[in-house]
Image (cartoon, rainbow, N blue to C red; front, side, top):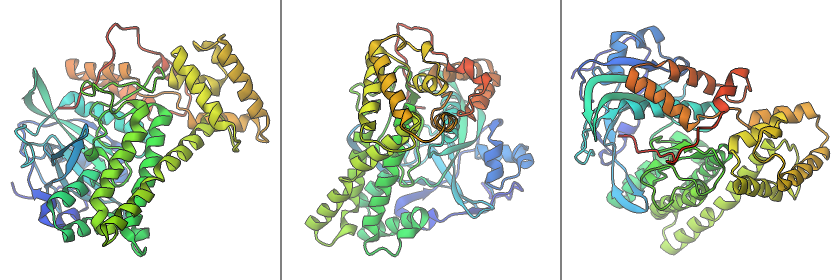
Length: 489
């Protein structure tokens, strides 16, 4: 396949390709039969400096399908490792190819990756392809996360390939174009530590610092600072997940980024009824990645990063371990601080009082005991419509509500300011699982993308409390089967 310049505004660099060859394999996408552009993220494309008209052309679609390579691209598949459900495995981009890094008009750098463009050396027997449903699901959820203010990879486009893929049944093939601050993972460092040289590990760490944390380049022990910064980023990220009821579903170490962005939206979902034990993923039979266990898994994953970095932390192994343990011990406090700060905002608190943590804990216990919806409970507190909740009339909640009102009365800020703080902190709408499934079913089974488009529009401004959001706040109908999600294939 020859490189061809497509006049779409691509301005690609390939800094990752300048790392040692250990970390990747040069690999072109496999062309597909008849690509069709299904959805294009126009605001994201514009921010990247891309030209909408050209992206929507036949040549633009060909780039998203992997049939044409834009000028400046150096396609590659990244190598990495990972603990998957606690078991270590050598991995890599089995169905993803990095085209390059788009330099935006503001000078920012973003990875442009095709997901589902064919086999790579890391495919381990797979076909390297992806189905339409999971790719649209990632588009919906990742863009919803972005609108919620949660660091995340984003979705630029989805194309169908015109070719079926075989799983349990025949499915429509598709390719997602993913945009990320980078695709550096904890698993990338595990790969370097396990199969690379000491110099290659150092080069990778220096690259990560330069790309994501340049402010620490001159630190006395910049590798310890790198560990510290990733711990801080992940503590803040996971707290944000907990504050909106997001369940990642597959927190393997290869799905934890060095940048602090959420990545991989396979079996993820949002919690309806509050329950820390909630699991949706069909393969998480032991609840390893349950909602309430996400902070614990976060620090477990970070410990694997610390292990990988040990040779860089100190020449003395014992001292390196001590330094790493000291940094890891900070995660719990960082997470708690971020979570409590977010909960204070969700409850309308401008200042801090010692009793706040117990007030939050009491509310969550009441919600769990009585099966209250997580999002709608905070929405009702925001709009003073708690009569609509299952908690209304329950003595425990009535007592808690009085304590909350008393706490609010000790603030100097106005009621209007408090309501605005709560609206800015409590989404009026989230991507409810039944709404996502409704949109995917219409798109995949009927070729009707209007349901998804309406959902995306509502999710694009979750804190607006607009009237048109109301129908998207309703809970799913009772079902004898619990909701399950599956890894995208």
